[in-house]
Image 1 (cartoon, rainbow over the protein chains, first blue to last red):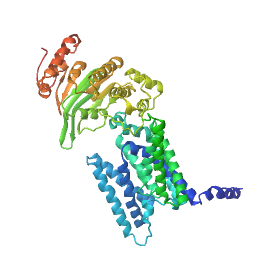
Image 2 (cartoon, each protein chain N blue to C red; image 1 turned 90 degrees about the horizontal axis):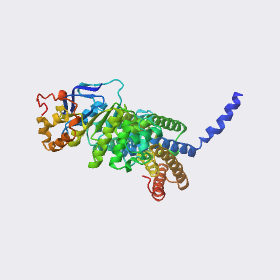
Image 3 (cartoon, helix red, strand yellow; image 1 turned 45 degrees about the vertical axis):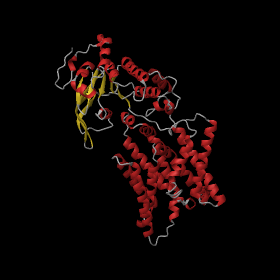
Image 4 (cartoon, each protein chain N blue to C red; image 1 turned 120 degrees about the horizontal axis):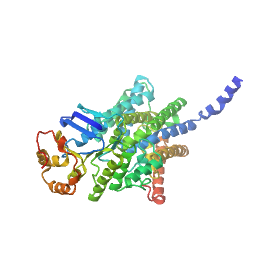
Length: 281
Length: 252
C-alpha cells in the first residue's frame, strides 16, 4: 500500500515542477507576493533609493559567495543586510541620506563587479545576476524563494500595525509603546530577504521595480493600506505571469519583460483611476 | 494626584545642551503649558516624557498605569498612503466603528471617518489627531504645538476643545505652545523654558517675571491684562508654586 501511494504522488505534482516554465511562474509569483507589502512601505517611506542600494550590494554578495563557495542566497542576504543596516545607522547620525546611498550603492555595485572579474575558474554569467535568470530557476531555488517569501509575508503580517504607526509618525509610535527603530530594522531585514530571493528572478538592477511599480499601481485605486498591499500582490503576480508569457511568445529576456508588464499595469491602473474614480485620493 | 515628576533632566544633542537640569511636575486635571523660544528644548522635553528620547541624566517618574495621549507637532501623511480618518484612529490598536465615531464626536469631527487624511483641512486634521490621542481615555494628554498651521479661529477652536477634554475627562494636559495670549488665559501653570526652566508658576507670575520678559518682551501684557480683567474670579490658585529663580514677585 505504501509503495502504491509513493508512486502515485511522485508522478503528478513533482512532474509539474519539471517544467522550467512552471518553475519560473512560481518563482515570479513568489517574489511578487513577498515584494507587495514591503513595496508599499518602500513607497510610503520614500525608500526607493534605499532599496536600490540594498539590491546593488547583493551583487557584491554574489561575488563573495562564488569566491568562498557558499550559497548565493546567503551571500546576497548577508551583504544586502549589512548594507541596509549601515545605511539606516548612518542616516540616523545626520548624514545626507541621498549622499550616503549614492556613495554606498554604487561602491558596492562597483566592488561587486570588480570582485566578480577576479573569480577565475568560475563560469559566471554576470547578466543573470544583474537582470535575473528566471528560466533557470531550479527546484531548490523555488524552495528558497517560497521560504523567503513566507518569512517576509509572515513578518509583515506580524508587524503590520506597528510598522504602519511608525511610518505615519515616529512620535506617535513611541507614545504607543512601539519602538520605530526596531520596526525599521525588521523592515530592513525583510528588504534584504526579498533582495536575496529576487536576485535570481529579476536581477539586482530590477528588484526595486518589483517593489515599487505594483505598489504604485495599486495606490491609484486603493482606499486603505491593506487594499494597497493586496492590490500590489495581485498586480505583481499578474505582471510575473504576463511578463513570462510575453517572454515565451516573443523570446524576450524574462526579468525585464516582467517589469515591462508591471509598468503597463501601472499605466492602466492610473488611467482607470483617472477616468472611473475621480476622487480616489 | 501627581502624574509626572521630572527631576534634573539633561539632554545633549551632539555638543548642544538641549536641556539642562530641568524639573517639572504635572498633577491630575491641570493644564500646564510650556513656552519658550525656538530651540529651547520644548519638544525635546515632551519627547523624553513619551519615551522617544533617552535623557543623558535625570529621572522621569510616571504614575503607575498612567495612560498618555500624544498629539505630535508635525504630522505629514504621505499622499502615497491611502489612509482614512477611521483607519488612522485604528493605529496601532484596532478599534470598532462605534468607538471611532464616539471619539470623533467628542472633538466635533463627526462624519470624517471615511475621509482620507490627506484631504482634511488643517483644523479637521488636528481634531482627528486629538481624537486619536483620546481613544484610550488618557490620564495625561501631551500636545506639541497643536495649533501649528491653523488660523486664529481654528486655533481658538482647538484650545476650546482641549479645555473641554479636561472638563469632560479630567485628564491633565501638558502642551507646548507659541500663542502666548491663549496660553496665558487657558493654562493653570506656565513653564518658561530656555534650555533650563527660566521661571514657572501661574500665568501672571510668569508674565511678570523678568526672565520671561527678557525672552518675550512685554508685548503680551496687553492681552494678559485683558484676560485678568475678564477672569479675575478664576484665580483660586495662590502663587504658592512660584518660580524657583529666586525672584519674589508676589501678587500685585
